[in-house]
Amino acid sequence: MTIEDKIRAIMKATGWKQQKLAEHFRVSQSTVNRWLSGSEPEGPRRDAINETYAAHVDVTEPTADPSLVRDIDEVRVMLERIDGLKPENITVLLSAIQGFQQVNGVQPSPVPPGDQPALASRPHESEPSRRR
Image (cartoon, rainbow, N blue to C red; front, side):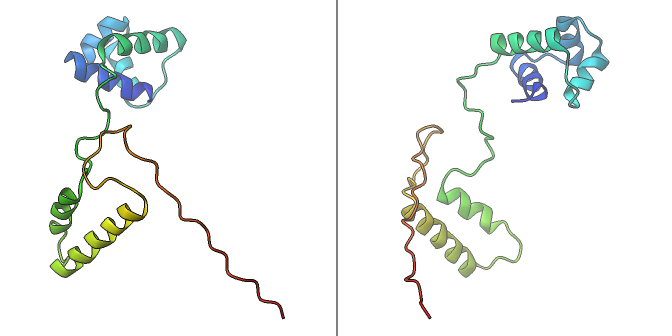
């Protein structure tokens, strides 16, 4: 997680704006703005950001984007929103996704992050060599 991500998470968790963060870290608001634009703070400031992050952000919450698709019904809804995609194409795509899930041992129902099984790999079948 980048410093920028941590600062944004602090802002979300605390409701603080850039000015409040600036006061907390004893820097100017423009410095906080630079950090949010990707500028890296020096050591002691970076340490202070990490400490504030640890103190205010609940890292046990899932960090996954809530807009991510979690199950086949959500995939269907998203596919139906694609302009020009025909119903028969949606059916074919959903079948392919479900086939992928079966081959790879993926649970068809939503599984919490961290509880998902690793993708299974198919054994590699080599073709017999041809001698000339």
